Amino acid sequence: MVNLNIEVPDALHKRAKLAAMLDEKTLKEYLVKILRERVSQDAAANGFTRTEARR
Image 1 (cartoon, one colour):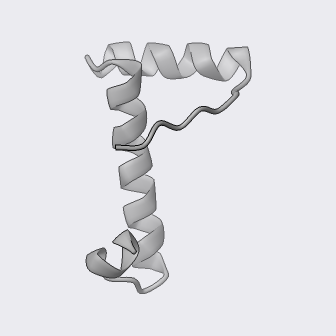
Image 2 (cartoon, rainbow, N blue to C red):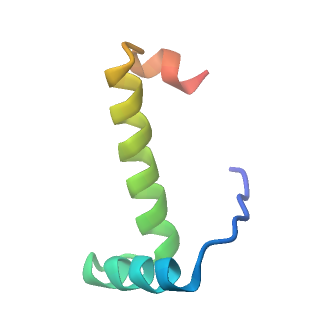
């Protein structure tokens, strides 16, 4: 697993933290979930298979 450090605006952090709580997940779990979903959607929209998207 890779660590990813990013800076986000305070307001976005608060909104994401609240969304994670409402989804009963940690912020990390929530962000990984939505990142996975978005990357899968983008890959599918661009015609990549699941295996190709992992490369």
